[in-house]
Image 1 (cartoon, rainbow, N blue to C red):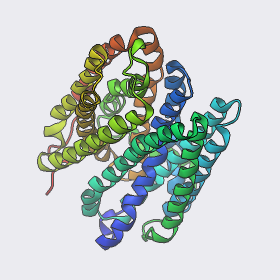
Image 2 (cartoon, rainbow, N blue to C red; image 1 turned 90 degrees about the vertical axis):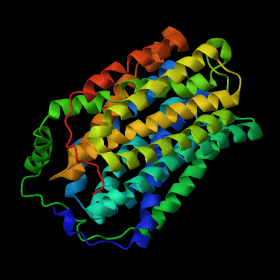
Image 3 (cartoon, one colour; image 1 turned 45 degrees about the vertical axis):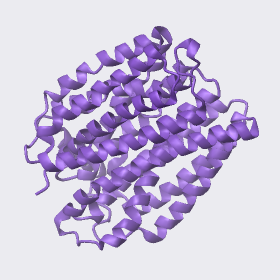
Image 4 (cartoon, one colour; image 1 turned 180 degrees about the horizontal axis):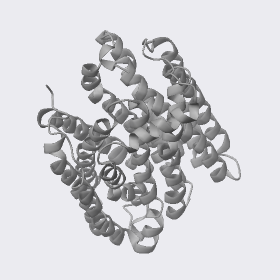
Length: 427
């Protein structure tokens, strides 16, 4: 497919759908991966169970490359996007309905699985649609916009919705009722935006089913074979799996660490305070780090910035160790530490995102980008699964010591990859 031949869309029209599309892409992900952790912690589920079962929810993102060719070969990506957004609205409603049930943990996990599968498929369609609807120069111009609105969804989820849940808990006196109302609000809002996209998303000529070429299985296999024939694929896979090895473990325990009582090593914050310092201020720092990361790569290229960015991403994990050792009472001190860590994470993660675009170039770029994100999800899922068990047995201080040790594989993987010195530079 020759994306260079794509007509240049009017910039004002592009602004009508890219912000809402990527905000909607971020909401179900942050609900499944982060909001669910806060909810289950409020509902007195153990750290071991939270880390294990919510890490399993990464699996649809890990396996999505298996059905990415289906999105390429059947119907339009526009239709996939709108249909899946309505399905996700229904999934939010089902969580609200199952929370008051006696076996809420099993039931909500089952619905979160549906949500994760739908969200992962939506990611395939949305990222593919972005590549088809915009010519290359606009793809580069709007990569910061899509990233920013995706991160704003994280602020809305980790910050606004967590704070709202804490406020509703105080108002209603019931954790279950508070989270039921939050998911009901999500269901209504998500369905409304899906209806908006039905009318607003463009209909690019390039958005059509890929030619099947007769044998579906043969074409399906060819997409995967082409990816694994890419030069240096072994080093690429090591990088995709290990770049976030330490962060994947820390992320699963940050919210429990902030919420747990001080006598068990936590910081004893309320749900509302977590929504402010981690979900709002912390994510704003994450967004700013990501924007700065994209800007400096556009100036100097990915190759030149890779090592500084991996250092800035991993070394601030030391903040968690310091917080666990000192257990500060001041919300300002805690917030400052989280700002430093989240800014570093956002800055360094940009290198990872740009590298995935670099790897996915060429034929089948939608499916190959999905493969990259699948390995990214596997790199989050596997380290995250035992993280709660490790913390329960080590305590928070020794767990965060381990997180610092776990940064070593990230540096080793970065040393293996090769990148075109000019890639990422603004021409």
